[in-house]
Length: 292
Figure (cartoon, rainbow, N blue to C red):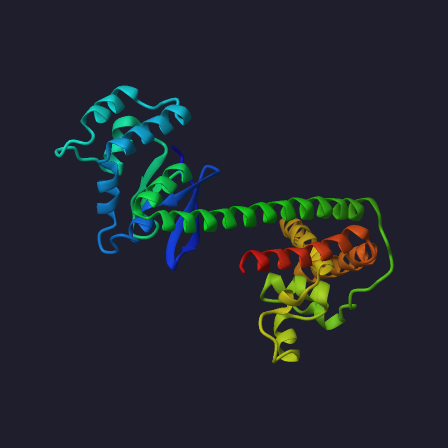
């Protein structure tokens, strides 16, 4: 299994439980769940659970339904041995012997441990405590709803941005809105490439903005509106191309400033930009509501 891990975290009755995305599928940390029963040795509750014959039967059935490479012969051996006093099972033994995918084991000091598909993790949580399982399901569903909402917003935002960028490439407006850069700014070779973009769009460097706004946290870009952020993204792409052409900083600054002027005038009344601004507000409200 190609495990490209993206980690998230749930709060289940005050217990931090990691959720990891493995190739598009959410896996819940059995190690974190086991700490609900044994904080010092979480591997022990997992092993005790896996010694149970009904658990082995459940794991085998899950793999049979979801894993075409599951080794049924090895599973039959475990099925016959499970339940007797001498039977011992661990996640690593189960994975290595049966080629299981419902449970994965990840080594490492940070992010290591045993993870399982929700179907399996919920069963383990139920064995630990039915109440704990219900809290886990509630928090996991909350995470999935939040992700689904964010994905929908991201898709809509991308679609609207595409429309806005299409307009930029098909029209040209000569009116100027962005602050006109001075001769001094044109000649000044800024140490930071980011400041070239700041001056081209906002008419000032990051330091100049901080000096004018000593009581505000963050930086100049944190206070940019949707339209400015769209144009800033465009300028970054354009600047990279100009750098490849070995254009001097002074000439690039002038070119980027002229581009910013055209784009901000072209897009300032665009309906897609207005929709994006509303979308941003909706996103903030939605995320706040899912955290309640």
